[in-house]
Length: 371
Image 1 (cartoon, rainbow, N blue to C red):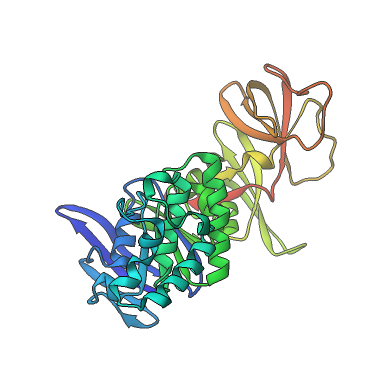
Image 2: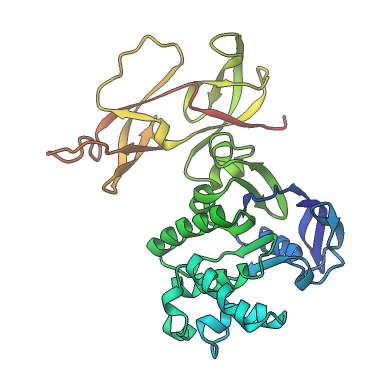
């Protein structure tokens, strides 16, 4: 699918600014961003429910902007399910086939097939008001897939479900995608949802696509401050490059020293050329920072080491999140996983003096700022 320079405004408000995306056939592709960023408008343009002011939209090289929704071979699963309350599960799923005039004998076999795919074969004669939220969503997915579209569009389909059911449905959705192999375009504001199931993600904000990449690329190598903050948790600082040394081994990169006003001097490696005096943003993920009550003993030159006091520990069973105050003014978030059983409970407590350390390879220069 090719999305070329798609722009859309409502009155004086511009919702989308010249969006360019290439979505691969069979890909699970997510549009991720906060409310109002334009992701649902873009999905509605793909579906044919909205028309862009500019740009083109191609399915397999054919521009489909002039085609009505029912001729685009793209079906949509909505947040509110959009099931017919007076029809049974069977009739809801069969509805698209009846509209097309498919013979009854073929309809029965096809509906049975897709109810099995959605794990709803035992609920065919129930009405929607007899179903749970997760069951309604399965029926909506089966109905959207029964026409065998080239593209399935999913508009925040799990947001009405509770957290545990949402996780369960995500796994089922990914399994359905693997079974049928068509293109899924998934709209969500939930970073964990997008990271869990996507082949690639487009992070959007204020009508722009800020970064497109795999979940690993988006998380580990954010392109902007916004992406770094929006995807998961991070510690983000502005600083100035103090020095930059080219390293040829073990891989070609630069070892950069930068001054962060509230923290001090830190070391970070980067594949990009940066010059002394440049203003940059630096990020370090909480789980990449080691926390200990004893000072680490190391001769490695790439280790950043700071001392601080635990301002707030938040125990969550499988992990503890620490807010550590460094230099009496900056809070650094640290996540410690609990991989082993401990008889005595957490070994680091509120107000404990601790050491924080991380490798220069674990931090990341997000973007170079304008001088």
